[in-house]
Amino acid sequence: MLRLLRHDLRLLLRDRLALLVLVIGLVVTALAVANGARWIDYLETSRADFLTRTEAAQAEYRAKFAGPEWTDVDSADAPYTTKRSFAFPVPVLADFTIGRSDIEPRMAEVRMGYRADTLFRNYQIDNPERLQRGRIDLSFVAIVVAPLLLIALGYGMLASDRDSGTLRLIAAQAGGVGRLVAARSINRLALVIGPLVLGVGMLLLTGPADPARMTAALLWLGAALAGIAFWWALILWVNALRVTAETSAFVLIAAWILLVFAAPPLINSAAQALNPPPSRMVQIVESRRAEQQATETYKNDHGTDGLAELQRVKDVIAQYQRISTAHDRAIRPLNDAFERQLAAQQRTVRQAQWLSPPMTVSNTLAAIAGTDATTYAGLRTASFAYLSDYQAALTRGIADNRLFTLADHDALPRFQPPPAPAPGWLGVFWTLLVTGVAMALALSRYRQLTLN
Image 1 (cartoon, rainbow, N blue to C red):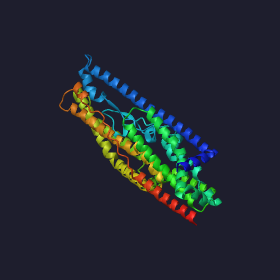
Image 2 (image 1 turned 90 degrees about the vertical axis):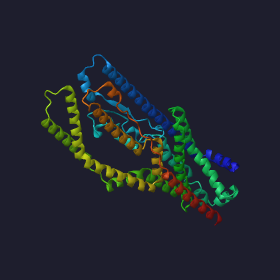
Image 3 (image 1 turned 45 degrees about the horizontal axis):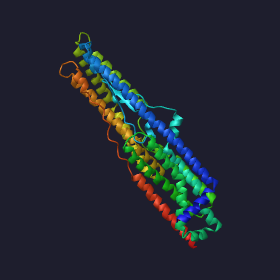
Image 4 (image 1 turned 180 degrees about the vertical axis):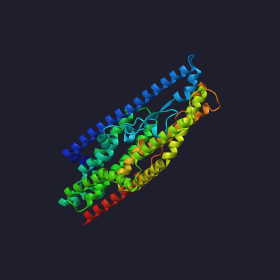
């Protein structure tokens, strides 16, 4: 077998196309590694800078609170002026799969007057065309580039031998068609997988010193290799059909376009068409209307002249609570309808993604990296719960007719991110099942061709 591998490798390296494939793989992987390294460094740096600034501001505010110039008026205003800031943890493999980390907000602050719909204000809105294309990262290499390079190497791997009538002779010299397919597969897969593995190693060496990264990177690489194996099995199966090498190339390119580029937006569009969400514009208008109406009602029912400082603050907090309650009551039906439709869309996507194994692998890679939609949905939910807990703590701090104290300030809750959800592996298992079936059909067909 080793002799067969060396012989096939010598022949392969004499082919300029194989060398071009290797060069393209190395260049694109190098670009993906550079982009990923820059991106995770940006995430780490911006998060550290944000936490440093907010911690310094908190320390300054606390020192002022404890200082001699702090008055009862300041204490009365403290529930309104105090705030807490928090930042989401950096995804463990954001440099492998950028995913939604360049769209979702990463940090926010909570105050008495904030609501869930106004909590996040710093979404990372970038060039829409670039966001649609996505960044070039290792997931892009594994899902988009690697299959195309495999097609270039394998579209006529056995079809040309079959068309020339030499397949039976070559298989006999190799000791069987299985050995021949194995030798040619190993060498061609190595040319495509090698740069990807090298890129994984480079990011592990240059990335953050997080013990969880090694395990996550191995899982990520395993899922990526499952996707690459699917494409190679498909290439072998198409080679086994009674079509020319040119037709084989056309079929494989068409499959690549359909499964990689066409299927994901078609599935997402179908999910939205089947489960249309309520209009966000209607939600915004109704939210503003409810807030304005509640504010005007409160002003008409309550005066503010002559209030003591403590009573004034309690009155302000009661105003916020009344407005928030009226606001939530008015827009809850819209929010509930939106959440129901969004959940239905996600169910539809999960059910339909089985039509495209590359799509299931891509979603698994993002889940392992911690940059998928489910992870960020959990972080947002935890943020809304934290906002509610924070405001409840402020209310309790002055509920017993006393001024807000430094101890109350220090006892305010801090944001705790939820545990990262475990990635689902059903998509990878399904991809491996399809790969095994395609491989078995291809080998069975090759044996028939050599016996006939």
